[in-house]
Image 1: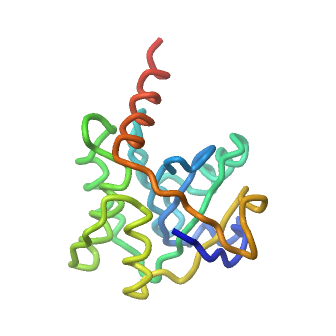
Image 2: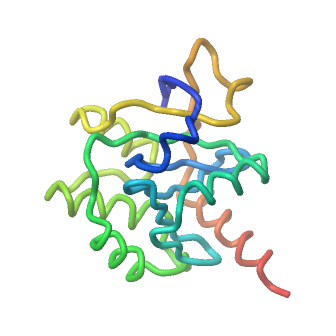
Length: 172
């Protein structure tokens, strides 16, 4: 998938932003979270984050030198519904992925169902429905060509391997 990046992320604007957040050290695969009015929601192999200030999360991403893309949504999903869906989804294990609660929250808000199992399938569908205002990035300047970033395809096995690696790195 080719992503047309409009600009770098403006820290002043993230406090009120709604969007889908892609993050990680190499984007293969990216971690997916949801941003609602500047509050971050995410399910990972380690924890469930609900309504955390994205300002704090973004600073941690910068410290860890993570790459970040925000697909700005032109609507604001329900914080309450996101809280429930992310809680119910829980920590990633088995076949669960980080896209699941993000997609469900958006589908719930729009009263629609989308046939997408990966973010590189989901974003083009949202674009087709004109639900994305634009894309913003951090840390991808060297990987972009003329304002465009190529998000690589990956498999379900790539996602599950990544989750398994994170679970193993948690073992002490």
